[in-house]
Structures are given as C-alpha cells and as structure tokens.
Amino acid sequence: MMVTANCVQKTTDRCQPQENPKALDLIDRYHKRFPVQRNCIHCFNVIYNSVPLSLHKELCKWSGLVTGRLDFTTENETETLEVLEYFAGTRKELPYGEYTTGHEKRGVE
Image 1 (cartoon, rainbow, N blue to C red):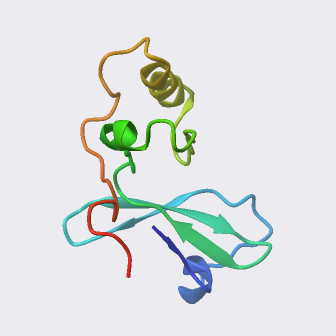
Image 2: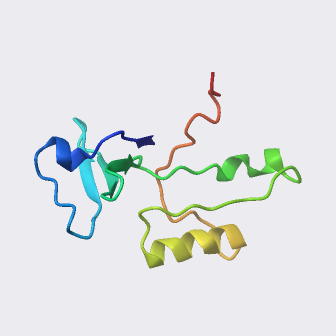
C-alpha cells in the first residue's frame, strides 16, 4: 500500500536497529490492522493493506495476455499453501473472505 521515507519507530523515539526487525501493526480509527515491515538497514517501512490484494476475478480478462504472479507478504505457511491450492485449481474457495482489488476498476491517473 505504501513505502515510508522514514522509519515509523524512529519517529516515535523507539528505534532499535540492532534487533532483528519484526513486523509491526498500525491500527486505524476503524480498528483495522495494517502490517508494517521495517527495513532498519535503510531506515524505511513498507505498510501493507489490512486485507489482501486479489485480482482473481479479473484473470479471464487477461487470459493469454499476461502470466500470473503471486506475491506473499504477511501470510503464514498454511495461508500460502491455501492460496496456491486455489490458483492451482485444487481448492474451490479462496482462503480469505475479505480482499481488495486496489485501483483495478478505478485506474491510475
């Protein structure tokens, strides 16, 4: 969703670069959790959306034009396997109920 130009922890005076950076969560006013992956070497963060990005319903639109790509960010081993099974055709339902399509329908200006 977003890459910050500075570290979230450093701006709150809790920078601990000697530690192995663990993911944090930012919580918005609706109590949604946004995972934050810290990069302490270069002092920036990647903030992910609170729900997965999935364009699975749009695949038929691009059939034969592009090859697929799956990026995993905060999924554990079980969740990753379930998503792979869905796209391999051995699972009927997506393993997550809520997802976003990003700006797919809106486009980008």
